[in-house]
Image (cartoon, rainbow, N blue to C red; front, side, top):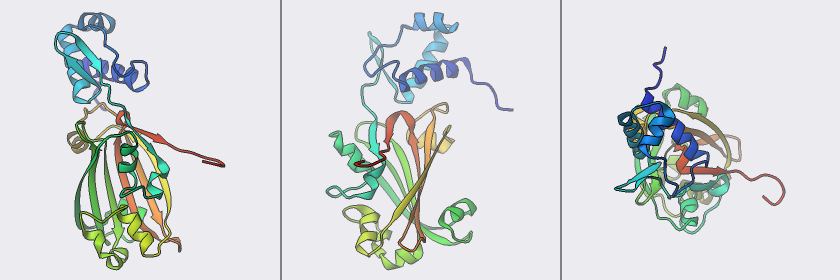
Length: 249
């Protein structure tokens, strides 16, 4: 049976919910430690621990001599369609971040791995099949990372487009290289929510009680073959997903 959250974690979660849901807007000041202690029936040392956890999650900033303020940096607003078109040299996350006048970053590692059972199901290949893995950490300069994004590509495609093995795959990334090779890619994406694993907490600089969105996206070619799969883990309050439907969307 999982252990119940500590009092400090419970206070952190309650305040985080008010921030994420917009009740406490960017720039708003939190109540004083004394008022929070009274409201939550806790001592001030517990409240201080909760506020430290909120700061570690990037939700608030402590202003010496003034109090604790909800951070003013807005989440990256990401349109789902950003991955389907190249804007300048970029697609996807970089396009969304640059729309807000911010400077995005991506740290990438590339390796060839064997697909485990879950990944193999997504790729529609036998377990143990070797695939190319492109793992990225993404965010905007001066702020904690927004997401991890890991893409796996089948080796038939990699052999056809060797540049996919390079850190820099060129303007527009792998999807522009696929288009240049004559592939028309259709996408399917599923979204769920959970608490972060320990390695995700370290990479994304978040606490154990801060929810993350997990997204699995599959890209299929004109023949219906799965050519790549991408798994994103996104810090919920640092990223806003936008979906458009209907005529004129």
